[in-house]
Length: 340
Image (cartoon, rainbow, N blue to C red; front, top):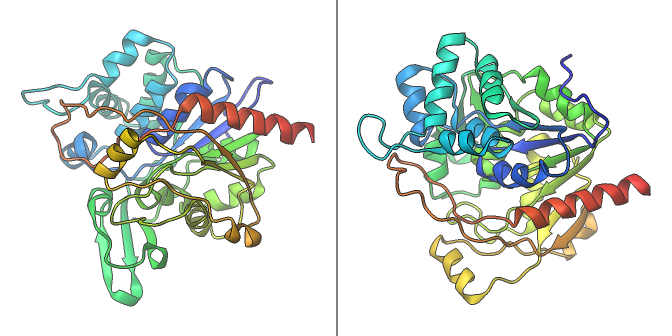
């Protein structure tokens, strides 16, 4: 099996999609060089969706974000994030186009990511969760409702309870063996914040991921979403988010859940509400039946500004964690567990 880690530093595997993982990785690289970012591979919206549809390649967008987060080359990082504003490439980021070109020239997406990692001087490894070309399906069997595609699901206003839906990948996917090795060899596994049904769920349901999460001796922490998502997770508590994470895997496997207990300012709350988002609260009564422990903190970050060059259709929240605060809490938690 591939060896993703080499040195004696703390070994951290981060599981997630683009923006949620980007937030954590940007700060984690200041604490260790032994980072494995395991990335969701069902994105089919925006620039990524166009490239997938027109060229038949694997989705580069979330991979690009994680590469950029771990890069030690500021100028090349800015180049990878540059998004064309007009012309044939209008709405596309340079990094997405380069990753697609590298896949075409090498014939292998893993080689494409490895080459991009060299160009960006990546501090760690970015690992596609699967190398199969898959699309996401969400189904409510009892209601005879089926949604096809990450972009469609991400933008949908659910008419049925998502907790009664099943997620699947079409065609069936196999896990990237390097991703499984990273989970099993890590000291700390972090489930990054992200959309439950289009970012985290599609990765966690890949055959082999559940087994790796159960085999690993790592401390496993879920960094809970700051806010609910309008039309999908309205009124979800921190516990509801964690319960869905464990439902995708099929067994209780979380050791800890990090959650935000900071109250936003009136101005920040108003910006959240403009996105139809509300702070996820902890249900202390529900903790009596949970097998994980919770750790609260002040994790609210600034609201990101929309990229005006992003003209291709895409749905993305602008609400962010305070990455430095979250990562410090993760490191402190790991040190406490290690010394206990």
